[in-house]
Image (cartoon, rainbow, N blue to C red; front, top):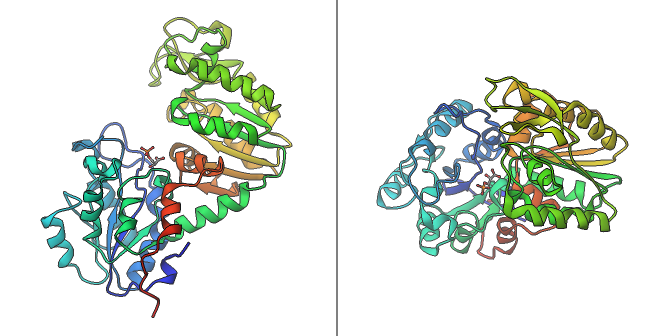
Length: 401
Ligand code: 3PG
């Protein structure tokens, strides 16, 4: 794929799609982790150094085509402005005459941030009208949103039909690193998959099973797995419609000789906000009305043992509610175990990246991917629609002068 290095951006209006879908404080306003903003700085700085007018756009959360006051981009613009050391104008819309007016008065080296793309139903529907509205703002399109490139949305795919399109540096780095590291993984290859929901990771779990030697499950999705095996899981979130899926997955793992590991003990509590007592129990003794907050010490020891000797490890999704100290041990221990391994270690996903950054082990990983779902799909061998669109883009890019 072509990158910003291959095009002339001087005085051009550049529409830059990024994945600034950052974790926000629950209590309103603040950004909990700005990694996804920082990792796009090289592309933004390059464009500014080359005198482009930079029009940045991203989604934030899942507002489903409606305006949600808690998901406006204003705090993101503020943070970006601090990081860049220059003003970043935060617009209240993404398309239309008002936005076009602001863009037409931009000077070279100016930066604006459009409103949350997902306030518009046309974004997720990949509506050509919405894509054209975005394309009208710019001369070239740069996609640096690796983390959103598994979505065939208007700002990821649609817009490439109307503008010459290239990759940003983050996109280039992700595709090269992930492709190189995981194409022919050295074995044993372990995948550690956590996070809240099985349903978010269905396709990937399916796809990954034939590729790995060990599949380790943790986090909120554990409850659905445990219930599928007849355990009582208290008040933990269970996706009942995924129980059969999870059973099939276990069969699939067996038929591919994959070691599928589930927790044998868990940390439970009547609430997950850190205000109640917690206890470690066997998975067969989860009290009614309690929640699973983390994996237990015996499970940590089993997982650590299974990981030792692995030559490739991919980790996505925390092992528990790691933001709450009471439930942080599992994620912390798995993070430091993976960090110590003499292996290719790839970590992906918003909250997993947040966890390894917070725990100070990000430097010990081979590659920390900013993508969550995108990374999982990429390593399970799927072609991401956003990457495909860049590869296929036939509109002529303005050559480097
Ligand atoms: C992510 O957080 O993985 C990306 O920003 C994509 O978000 P989505 O799953 O809401 O499409």
